[in-house]
Image 1 (cartoon, helix red, strand yellow):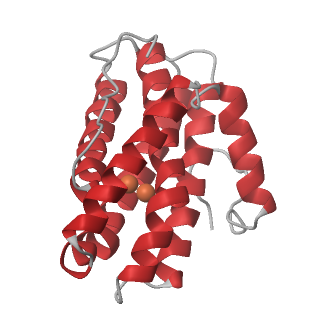
Image 2 (spheres, rainbow, N blue to C red):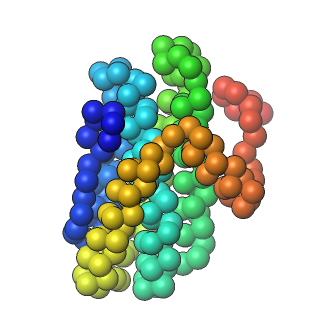
Image 3 (cartoon, rainbow, N blue to C red):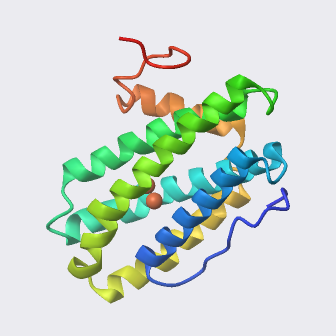
Length: 191
Ligand SMILES: [Fe+2]
Ligand SMILES: [Fe+2]
């Protein structure tokens, strides 16, 4: 909002389309972070707002309804989505906490964030968005679209992507066991 980067302001529509639109926005912002085609500090803060608002509103409003309404979307699928949100948010926190944006550490953190988000987007579109398109009525999808968009925008207005708030969300996810397998090692995995 205050960053000068367009974080979008959807208000109505099919929730599945609105979510997919945001995924394209993620890809665009991540590309800007990787390529340095816009100020990286500005981009990372805008990305944090959209990613956190998007995922929190999904978990609060969309996942529970789709799980109830769509046979192909079960508790396991939803829980897996929440684990991936937690992993993405943890990688985001790393990107936000780094002081400089022209360091190897920043490059590594952006690569990890990019990979996790690309994976989550693909999986969510294949296992949640696509089945919901045929299994959930248009009325429910449009009702959810308005609710999800309002919540998403409200969270952005509250500055949900601040380092402090992202840290709080990651700590909460860890307490809930959503980050069980992770270790805090820096750099590449070594076996
Ligand atoms: Fe999503
Ligand atoms: Fe998601």
